[in-house]
Amino acid sequence: MRIGMTYDLKDEYLAAGFTADEVAELDSPVTVEAIARALVSQGHAVERIGSIGSLVRALAEGRRWDLVFNIAEGMHGLGREAQVPALLDAWGIPYTFSGPELLALTLHKGWTNAVVHAHGVPTADFWIVNDPGTVEEIDLPFPLFVKPVAEGSSKGISARSLVRSRKELREICAHVLSTYRQPALVETYLPGREFTVGLLGSGRAARVLGVMEVLSTEDGDRSAYTYANKQEWRNRVRYDVVGDDKALQAADVALAAWQALGCLDAGRVDVRLDAQGRARFIEVNPLAGLNPESSDLPILCHKIGLEYDMLIAQIVESAAQRAKARGMGAAA
Image (cartoon, rainbow, N blue to C red):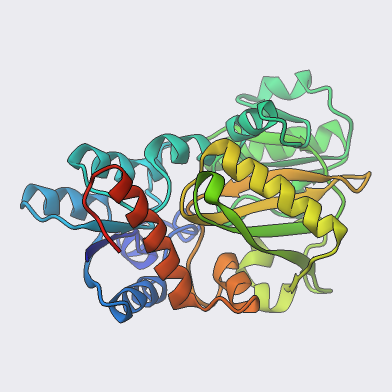
């Protein structure tokens, strides 16, 4: 196949004047190169398109592809991850991973909690804070956990996210509202083990690849998988593939959430145990990071013996089969 690649490179946005915090979720040339190399090794012709602006220009020039491998995160607005898939839908070009409606929903962690909860998937009790005054209405018991409602890569999550008083809650909510210019998600704190679950496939054909426990080292933040832990994971975090009863409960919760939301091709669901040891959905990553060295999904796949090139091949196969079923012509 002729496969285009859409992505947002961190370095390009830094050069354009964005700050390191603003581009924290974006990809590196290492990721783009690794995906391209995997696709070429499978016999595909690859065109590196880039961000949505480059995609718009390419479409205007009449360039087309059998499939687009999309990892573009977008930069602006709460619908930013949905922008490239929506554009490709308009041109009738098939692509990897979920569509715009799903990516717009899941970027908002509060709305996602509401949807999966309605499908019977257990979540922490939560509250969405849209303005400082909302903090006084929250009647959840402390301790609570606070994070931006629409950021990835643990951006905005630090040791301050765990709050034990109304005063701390006001302060961290004000910080999230002013710094990230978006609502804050306030949840009942889940003090138990944390897992990230890898998933492959779509709908009823989706399956759990494996369950990886995220453990803090002595140098890491123990309250959660914070931004600092994720960025300095080699020193602050240990990842163990696990298969005990609690891990299997986490896998069941993750698969139920994946299927309830209708996520496609591959990704991750994060799960944490509550005070009673019950698995609770935290968030879904339908556009999971694919850095071959530092992203959770490739790390998990490597630990279970699914090497990077095969992961990429199976993502393409899943997307191509979906396109074929819709009569869009892509064939793996």
